[in-house]
Length: 129
Image (cartoon, rainbow, N blue to C red):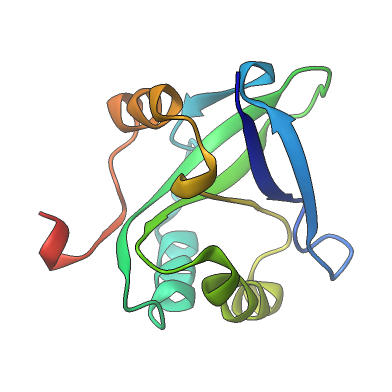
């Protein structure tokens, strides 16, 4: 059992909230339905400052005990999350109403494998291909 650190409901209240979630109490549900091209472009722009970016995924996610399905940005980067999060949340605060952000460094490998089996990256560094 691991803990997932996530910035939950990042933009609803204007400030990100870091929460620790037991890895067995949430799950990835696949890509959001509908046309999310604009959202993906906004997120790509927000990630453009990260020289260590490998891949980014957009997925629906549920948390045990929460009736709402959320949208999460999952980021695989060589950079420390603390270096990436401030400019990313500042960018998203201007363009996105609410999203959870997770970094691969905080996600158990079996969950990363699950994510990669159901969702293709929408943003990928040429070096990671």
